[in-house]
Image (cartoon, rainbow, N blue to C red):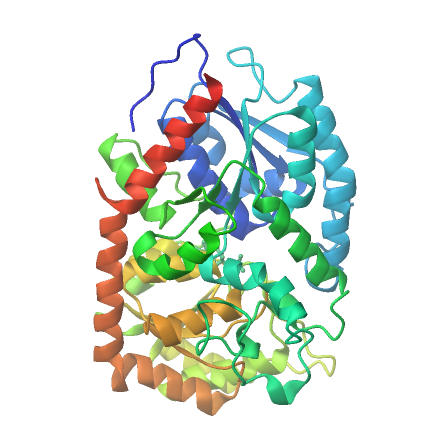
Length: 484
Ligand code: UDP
């Protein structure tokens, strides 16, 4: 991936526009770096809310400013700084992005303020697939080529693409709790695999006119109208499902696992990675703690940047971990759980036991943690970034999916790739204890072997000549061709 010859003197300028949260911004930063390494000029557009936090907690600003033509730009998400952007208010956040941010984006593109003196005009947009509904309209109106990038798995995307099918064959809305363990028929290629409980969480509605379900369907439709679709996966992992997706979207670029792919590219060019690309303050002391733990002895626990727990769930998890008598490293974000209304705190005995075998952080350097030799398992919410990071580190998972694409990912991890176990939504201390023991002892060999096989495939795909390596080169070539 070398800098290309540019016929009329100016490299392409690509506008990158992620959905504003950690799990989307992080893979978009990886994309920004792939393009910058290939000589493409990048404009990275994020909301003020995200940009401020990113600059506060990471060193990405100085890191990216070493690339010629790289520009940071910010945009409003239409909400006051202290307005909750997650949970129950998530839909209003989405609406505000579509209405307020959409209009601003169009004005910024039309006025030319997203370029720089070196390359004044945006020649291509890479927008988050989740925002496809309005970004595709803007790109069409302004006649700027657009490529979408989805930060979810191909399998969850395909399940989501199949929503119209599921409505037509009467499988949506789901009839009731009693159907949750039954198999779904209307997702081609997933017959015999997917249960109703494994569908993306926005399918759990009683009326198919629900705005979340309708919004996802519209975004998916628009997503297929771009010039291509970038995915953080690799052909060997999701090949059968990618074939199905290609019937809707012929030009797909599976370039993952992107974080590993990027590490290899940076090492080759002798460029160091940013020390953090998080919007949260990272506590690196846990690495020192891990350094003093035996090989594969620690269960790493994190449910990502968005998901929350009730206080009861937290306590059940805590007892499960402590009772398993295994070592654990747990990310308890300051907003992970709501204090119980009755004012009860976490039982003292749990805090005492944790001092013996556990370590709690507010935010961990997760990629580094998963690659650490002391880590033997990952209790995860099955977010796609976390799943890919665990997979490429060869660490078996315990899946406790919460929302969005996570249930599908969890099903594939446990039933198709067989590199983890599915907790089936249960948060009972006995189940947690058993699952931790299964992964760390009883089923360790089988799971570690399967995870190791998958790890090798992942590394091969991003190494020279591998499928993701070639797909990334094709993406860069196509971006240069658009500019010709
Ligand atoms: N992450 C991290 N430190 C933590 C927890 C999470 O760096 O303590 C990162 C993790 O490496 C992943 C991202 O946050 O890249 C979470 O993305 P994911 O898709 O797994 O879940 P989401 O947060 O979007 O639900």
